[in-house]
Length: 363
Image (cartoon, rainbow, N blue to C red; front, side, top):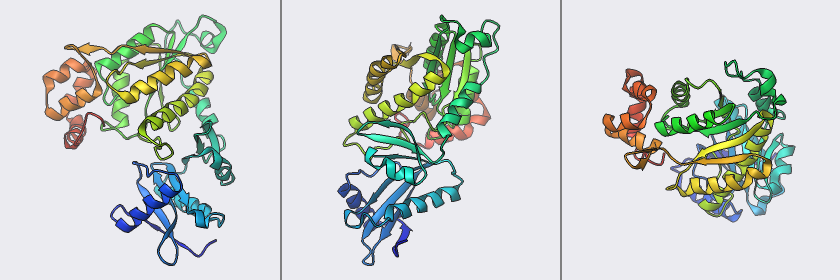
């Protein structure tokens, strides 16, 4: 145990923030844009010699000055961050690290979930966390339909086809409904994963409800909460990559590595995704998906976007309509179930949140 003191570096601490960026840069790390707690270890002259941060239930941006490596300082930073997380009630923790550091964090009680060689390793502090997640997915109930018995679902019928969709639905639109309709119609079972992370303007509980209400007429859908393993762009770390293109590629590669294991557990042979011609991020993701999924025996189906008035329907446009109070436009873009919710008094806090946001298009 060192004699150095660990203290919080607040966003308003200009000197601390400057030293933070300098230390991270010296260790080949960029300061991540998503941090909700940062600590620092300082020497007697108040020079920053080690640091680490949190975001949600993740640990990130951890570094030790090259002049102090080998002193066990990283152990103390990680222990401090874990205490902060436990005090917040976050017991299941995750971290992203360089491949060269995975063994070190393994010795601290973290277990590998997935890795992209020479880039990044995704780890958690529960030995059987991901395995338990897969088991729970397998236990999810089968849709109540007489044509899909357990024997057929379990894979005894070679012609049986299971597909998957992952959506944030912020909120659920006619475009989302169209995508679900097609995937459900073309397959025996559709596993619909709803991103459960609450980093969107529309809360997860509302997003899940609207997805389920808007697709309730389809009897062959199994709904899943994504949990912490299907990684959203909001939580994926940017600090290991040199630019945004590299971040997007790493995110796609890691997400697909995890998804492949989910698909194997559930017998999924197809994944559907909506086309997004105007988004470079989604374009990169779809390209990598179309290349990598077939290598693992999973077909990638990219579906052209449903249009309204000659323009692709998007959740961004829906949020803008809510922000502007344009109910006529909203009625053209969302199912009746979504429209009914937003017209109710129950939706008032969500609408106020959207109206208060500076930019609802890229949120």
